[in-house]
Length: 328
Image 1 (tube, rainbow, N blue to C red):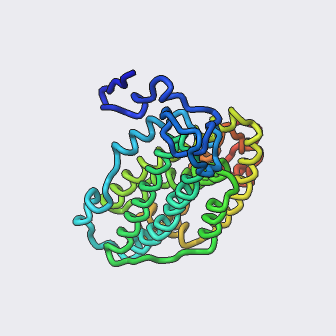
Image 2 (image 1 turned 90 degrees about the horizontal axis):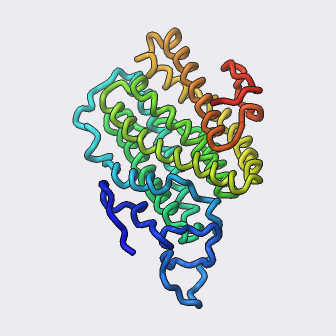
């Protein structure tokens, strides 16, 4: 049997042929032997803890992996650092506060996949390979936001208790399904929605370029998490309640995180283009952004097979959302 390259080259999907492409629902061994190899009967057990395909798989892992390796970028070379120019003090402080926060929260999306990678059965290697690209993506995000905070003299600013408590909630999730929901639906989903507003909150082309590049990475991560959770719930409906419980707690931490004025004021200043119009322009625009973020989160949950509208403790009524209507 021969694998045939496609117009894109020889992709992971191209080599998923015959038995080589047959990913078992319940891998029979816990070894690092390549799926499809002739394996000795007495190979050592590696002690993998995730041995069900449904617990980590998503139908889009092949495509997402290929996209990830094709769209890697450099925080050293691909940002026009030479174009960084002095900003008014209030804008520079706002940029640096957001970059401080993002350099902090992005690393959780490196630590979490790394925590679980060694626990995943090697027969599920395409999912492991994609998660490995996420580790690299998020390390680069931490790098780029740390560099932006330091390159223009503003420096790293405030790290608050609410942020760390939210990150701890994600990192200490009991199962991969709970961890994935907290990270991909809640945490990274909110970050993705923030990046999508980069044209509004970025004061210069440098920040806009950063948000565009990080956004394309985050979109992949959220796409994996959403379809992974849908796949998991379809194959094990009992997982839904387990995931709901994690999101119940995660949303409480998110509310506490949202009360941190350092972040909200910084966003309002950036949306207003300065402090002069922050009250009449910045904070109303921030309220609109928060409404978009919450609506987007509920829609992601719905796509993943989780109706959070009736269960969430987030202030959906303030957004005019009827709890009896499903979010499309």
